[in-house]
Length: 226
Image 1 (tube, rainbow, N blue to C red):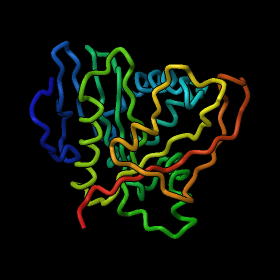
Image 2 (image 1 turned 90 degrees about the horizontal axis):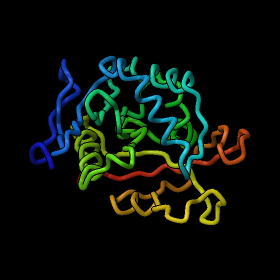
Image 3 (image 1 turned 45 degrees about the vertical axis):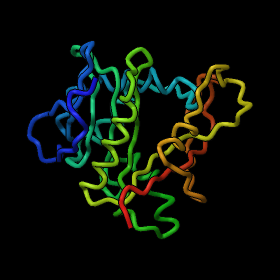
């Protein structure tokens, strides 16, 4: 159950992690900013490797590569991480950073289509991942995470919440028979693809065991009123 009704607090100014959600069976969701998340880098790296192997990403990552990726983000004081903990283990996480932030190397890939089209990045909050291991997913938890992201964007003076997701054809051979479309989930939460805004990246895939080119769409939701 929710630890309390959803009310956003400005966790970016807190000096210690804050518990914002709990479940009856002992799951705890806490907020961390920048360096606060660094002690959990190895836990998050393992989680990313595990979950990105699944369809649609099919990404075969390396532990060292994931650690390096996360370390660049933890160096930013504007990096916010929500960690879902079971005892001392990370079983899910949500992370976000202002799109215009300088520093994290991989953030430049997300910034590139905005720069190419001359779009001001200041009004955007970028969500990197929303991940929860299947066995720890609980009713309303994903809704809570998205609601938190929207509230965070507004609190930081941002008008839009965005994220990137790989594009896969429906007939992809690695698509599981019971796959639940992430696109439908995105649409359910009010996100839409930004037309003409794509990211091109290559990574080693578990289905081909080769480095393959991939295209990611940018999904966006306006979180402020006119």
